[in-house]
Structures are given as structure tokens and as C-alpha cells.
Amino acid sequence: MSSWNGSSLSRGSSSSAGLIWKFFAGLIALLTPLLGITTDSLVLAQLSSKVGVMLPTERKPADVQPRNDLSNEKEIAWAGYQEVDNGNKIRVFFPSGTQDCYGYRAQVAETDDSVTIKVYEGAIPSASDHCILVGSISSLVVSLNAPLGDRKLGK
Image (tube, rainbow, N blue to C red; front, side):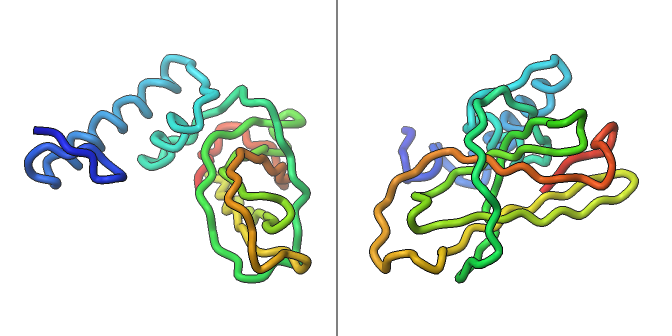
């Protein structure tokens, strides 16, 4: 009998269900870019990013301005990207909270073979102690020192 435990569907041993789940998520993540598929689904983008495959997306941009005045920062997962300005910039998409309470910034590390982007969320200085729970998808544009080209994009 299958049961929902709030985060995953499990049947029998949770370790075997986890392996099956990872197998199918990995298979989907690997096949979609090979077939030239882009995604507007944050769920599919998040699944693929869990196994290290970053998918381009055709999602409508919802750019926020990066902030450097955040407190209580934490790294958050981003899923899906778009190349902007011929690959000289990358737009990453991530789940976000209300902009009355939360701000975002990105950190970029580049090598000859890869580009790593980390997104951070934190409280803005004027944030209330009581923020409402409103979720949305936002995006942030980061500049690169050189076009993305054939380099691997990761978190």
C-alpha cells in the first residue's frame, strides 16, 4: 500500500523507494536537454537540478534587484535559467517570498569549464517581524566575465 508522508510517496522500504525516485528523476533530467526540451515547470527544473542538470526555461522573467543589505541570509535553490545578452548574463529562477520582507542576491564563480551561481535570501532592513507566507517565482540576472558558451552551469 502506498502512503504520502508529506514529502514523498513511499512503498515498502523507504530506501528502495528513494532509489527508484532518484532513478526516474535522473532519467527525466538527462533526457530532456538531450531532446532539446526546455521547461516552464519549476517542478521539472527542480527535479533536474537535484541530479545536477540545469535546464533552460522559457518562463516569463520576474526580475528582482539584487540587495547587499540582507540579514539572516541563507542559500536557496534555484531551478531553471535563461541566457541573456548572448550568454554574457544568466537569469536564474527561484521560489521567493514577499518582497516586503525578503531580498535576494547572487554569487558567481567562473572557471574555464564551469559557472557556479549561488542565490541567497535574507531579510531586508525594513522587514516586519511578522511576514505573510506568499510564495512566488522570481528571477535574478547575473553578469558573467565571459559568455557561458559550452561551460557547465551549476549551483
